[in-house]
Image 1 (tube, rainbow, N blue to C red):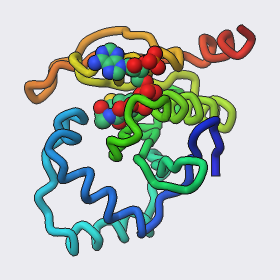
Image 2 (cartoon, rainbow, N blue to C red):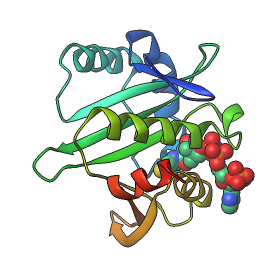
Image 3 (cartoon, rainbow, N blue to C red):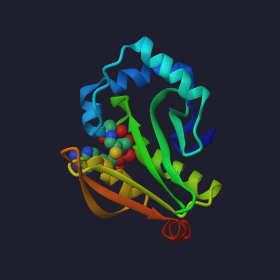
Length: 174
Ligand SMILES: CC(C)(COP(=O)(O)OP(=O)(O)OC[C@H]1O[C@@H](n2cnc3c(N)ncnc32)[C@H](O)[C@@H]1OP(=O)(O)O)[C@@H](O)C(=O)NCCC(=O)NCCS
């Protein structure tokens, strides 16, 4: 369990599957995440989910985001972990709309970034978010991420953002 100011991050568990399925079949959420709408049935999803929990990979660390009183409101992850390059990609989704714009995203990103830089040797965290997703960009900027480029993929326009360990360290002493 990793504790922030407003949230806790914990390992994923099978009982998260119902929420995750609901969020991955929500047209607005998948559009904001620039991923295709999930079309598999829940029973099939549950089978795949069980396999993923049983066989975790070393290049991907997913977490559930919980409020301090234990409500599962979303997920975050660092993945594409490349030890040789010393970097990984960060992802976040708060699926429960009641918790948007209340600082939970910013606290989640700051908490996950602290965890990564304190517990691993990674030197750079990067991410991509849709050009038009101002809320997400503001949330990442508040945790120190800076834009460094653009990417067009599958018809989506992304802003690329990054945070280097050195910049993170400087922010700790501010
Ligand atoms: C993106 C997301 C993680 C942000 O988390 P959050 O808890 O809602 O965001 P926060 O409250 O921590 O911060 C958002 C900031 O953006 C601001 N904001 C909200 N809508 C905005 C808009 N349209 N334009 C500019 N700023 C906006 C908020 O006021 C807040 O800033 P403030 O704290 O200075 O007032 C979350 O909303 C989410 O998961 N949304 C759905 C999925 C999604 O967008 N996925 C893509 C992630 S890459």
